[in-house]
Length: 584
Image (tube, rainbow, N blue to C red; front, side, top):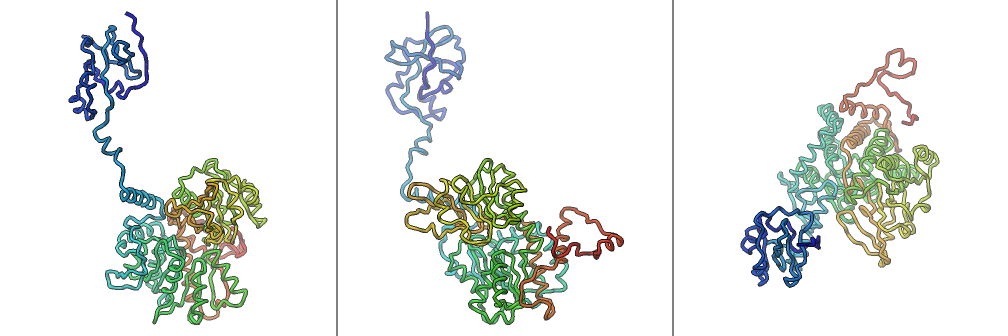
C-alpha cells in the first residue's frame, strides 16, 4: 500500500499537543485536564473514524514535521500515518484556546481603564528614565508645592519642596554620596572644631542633589547658616530636598518648576525678614542677578560671591568691566580642579548616561556633531568616539579647533553636516548655536541636546509655533513634529542634559564642592583689602590642596622633592608646583 506523507501547514493543534502513546481520539475531558479549553462542537464527538484502529505498536512521531495526509474518503479530513502504514484520522477541532486566553486577551479596557493603563505606563517610563528617580514620588499629585502647607518633624515650615515624606529616602541618597566625597568629609572633620564659617549666612543657588546636600551639611558643620534654591528647574532630586528640609535647611526647590516658580524660590531664599545673606554661592549667575536687580542694598553686607559656571563667570566679568560689581568674586569654574575634573572627566561619563537613559540610543556608527571643543566638548567627543560614533566638531577658537583636529576629529561648520547627523550636542556656553534654520534641516529622528549650563544654546522658543506639534514621550523627552511628519527628539527642553536627565559621578562633584567650600572660607575670612571688587581665580595652592585630599582614595603616593631639587627648580617643597600661567 503506497501512502504519500505530506508536511502540510500546521493545524490549530500541533503534533506536540497530540498524545504520543496512542493515536486514539482526544476527549474533551482529557483536554480540560491539560489546561486546554475546547469550544463546544459536534465535530469533536465524531473526531475519529469508527473504522480506524490504533496500531498495536505505535511509534513516537517526530515533532519537526506533522505526519499527516489529506484523506479524500473522509470528507476532506486529515489522517495520521503509523509506521506500519495504517491510517488514523486526526481529531478535528474547530478551535482550541488556553483557558485564560479569552479572559486576558479578548478583554478590551474601558475608557477609564485605557486612561489608567496609559498613566501607569507613562509613570513607569518616568521612573525608569528620570534623573535619580524618586521611589516615593507621586506624579498624580498635581498640587503645586507653593500651595501646600508642610512642616518637618521639628515643626519648621521655612521651606518649599515636593513632599517632606520623602526625607528618609533622601537621607539614604546623601549617605551614599558621602562615601564618594572623601575630600569634603575630610575638610568637615579637620575644620569642624575651628568653625571657619561661624557667622556666615550663605544663600545658594545650585543643582540640589545628594552631592550638594553633602556640601550644605559641611558648610553648616563649619558654622554657616544656609538658604538654598535650585539653579535648574529639572535637576532637583525631590527626596534630597526633603531630607535637607527635615534636617532644618531652608530649601525652596522641586523637580519640574515653572519659570515663575524658579524666580519665586530664589526670592524666598533672599527675602526673609530678620535674615540677610553675607555670602553668595551661585551656579549660573541667576541668584546674583536677582539680588542685583531686586535688592541691590544687600551687597553692602555681602563679603563675596563664589561662581562655578561658564555662564555665571561671564556675567561677573561683564559686571566688573562695566564697574558694577560691588563685591569680590571667586571664579571657581576656571580653577584647574573644576575645569579638568568636573568639565572634562565628568562630562565624558555623564553624556553617555544622559543619552542612554532618555533615548536608549546605540552609539556605534552614529554620526554626532559636538558644538564647542572646550573641556566639556573634549569629554563628550572622547566618550562618543570610544563608543564607535563618527564625531564632528564645530569651534570658533583656532587653538581649540587645532586640538580637535589633532585628537582625530573632523572640524566642520554646523551647516555642512546638519542634514546627515543623528545627534547634535551643544556645549559652548553661547546663545543661538542651533537655530530654527538648522532644526528645520535636521533628518527625521535626530536627537538634540545641550551640555552647557544655560538653555540658550538651542533656540527652543522658535519651536513653539502653531505649525509644529509637541509630543511628550517621557519625562524630559519630547518629539517635535513638523507638518510633513518629520520629528526630532529634544531632550530636557534644551537644558543641561546630564543633571536634568541622569546623574553625574559623585567623586567628580566632590572635587568641585570642596573647591567651592574653600573659596567661601577664603573670601569670608580674608582681611579687608586683600580682595577688591573684581573677579579672582582660586589660588594655585588651594587647587593643589583639593587635589591632594582626593589622592588617598586611589592609594596614590606623591613623590617629594629633595632640598637640592627644590632649589634647582626654584620651588617651595610644599608647593605651589606650577606658576599661574601653566596650562595643565
